[in-house]
Image (cartoon, rainbow, N blue to C red; front, side, top):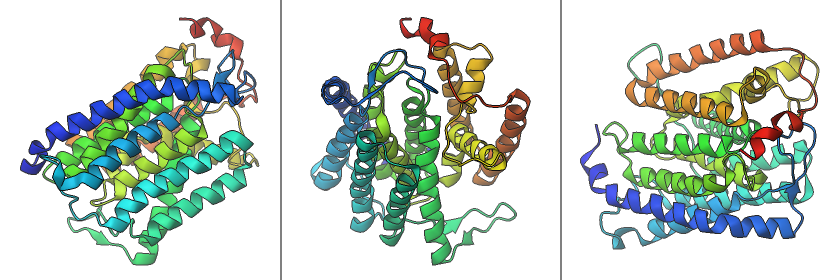
Length: 367
């Protein structure tokens, strides 16, 4: 049930969503041409599905849309009619959300420009997580799956969880970013789900909902240019920003970890099993192959669009499930999905090939 405070904030939610969508919609082509002019493009090649050079770094349009809209709403606050209060989110946490997001985008931009080694990317992600934890963004209470009372988490463990959560989310979004519109669409579904949950009387954080819908709007505007056939990719800048923001919006204020686990179950579980498979085969967890779930679905004969839409449908279904079940039931559902996903991938799996044949999807590029 939506809380009374959340109901009065609906006009602000809608305004934030529309404004961010329009900014990203207009800005993305400009960013695309800027990146093309600087030679920052993804060339066709192994493990890529694009058959022509596509500019990367388009996710910066989402960054600008969110920071402009979300930042303006946060700064103006009471001056905006029906704008909800921060609901216990302090200045330090709010600064960590926005400044950390910009730092995440900056780290990703460095990777887009200089193609950083995996170890430096991981180190930068860890620093982002540590900064967030130091400035008070952590999970101090978790649901007890074996009883009605919540479990209080000691500060060191709460901070450690925040670091792992942020690093894990960034990499989950990064790993699933293998098809046109896949990561941005999943992020859109997750942001809307977290926003809707924040409006309920159980969570009652309409301010967080406003930020979630601002992020969702930016992703929708960008998706117009990123959906298949994409004319621009998010790039690491957009991916890192999206992963960081989803991780933060799930734990800032009242933690919504179980919901995030469910709605983002596909990228999180895919990342888990991919890392397990790579480690058990004696390879680096960051080494590339075509063992992700979207590659498996393509191998089964699904087209590019069909694969993306199927994964959208799975994420939306899990998101809806997360809104109607209890946290304990949601946790069990996630663990069940983890097991089922592992079995499915095992059954589908052949030895991963190192290259993805772009030409096998060429007919989709002009569809």
